[in-house]
Length: 110
Image (cartoon, rainbow, N blue to C red; front, side, top):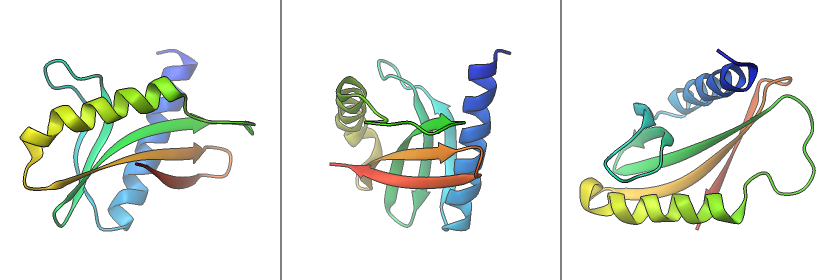
């Protein structure tokens, strides 16, 4: 397993841990459904499903941490999943992980 993949898995595990502490149930990690791009984490609390894209970094990053094309991909996934998830609400979230600090910040994508 390469370093980038290992770092990503560590970040996903840390995000899952934080989501559980916030009362979420982890439905699936590395979710794929037919023609969708991979969704790092599907998490649910009450009637809300979070589609979580995890961005893991080991050192400071300047500028945007998610590209416009990644946002469009996530928004496309949300539209495709609406029929699958109804009547639950779908929320797109980016989890910003700083491994050196073991910290996670969540950012909602409109």
